[in-house]
Image (cartoon, rainbow, N blue to C red; front, side, top):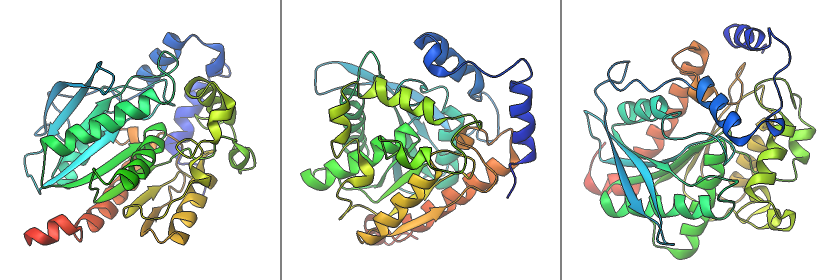
Length: 318
């Protein structure tokens, strides 16, 4: 289907003064500030999910440092917990940029949401962001025991969410009920993205992704490691997965292929395409009705998975 009308107008407005400066030509702080400016502002004192309470918590990491997490508590609690990893190419994004999305998930799913403020590249390249995210997931599991635990993320956060699930499969110390992967990047070679229908022009380009990978994993040899090159990783034994893509996104085809490979590996998958949408739509719910509708469908699919999750079934909750 064609690009959503509101998104088309927003992109046209952004380009009124000329083509945007590529991310790799900006300073890191300028790129982060641009991301913050484009992200919907947190609305702690109002908005559609004002009943969700939020509190920041500092948690320790395995290397003796600490990171900040934001814990969202819904008014109606259905015994679920989500560790959420924000997107932004492992470089951009923060707790505030994804505040509204986390509130929506908490309210819609009746879940406590722990949004992890992992350390970012280039100051902290791979594997530090992934290890921080894993520490946050373990903290969530210890702090909220006995709940159906979901690892979720959008974009780079989805990449790390899948990596955490793979690590948990090997260690056996982090029971997971489900995975939520929203437009995940999984092919660091970018061959799939370069060959897709929309490699450029819709808020994310293949070159942007190349820049993000260069900062996250500076050594090209390490991009072949299973926790980075996820499209070629062993996907067997992972939790039921909800995977969402966007039609006008260079990552669409690799996300769709990941869904196929998960299915082939025996993982139950619910795939949610995003017709007419672009990368980043999960943050546009309050300004783009089509983005909000698709995000609701994503959450509904995750709710359906959790309604049959083992922990919840054992408690007799439906």
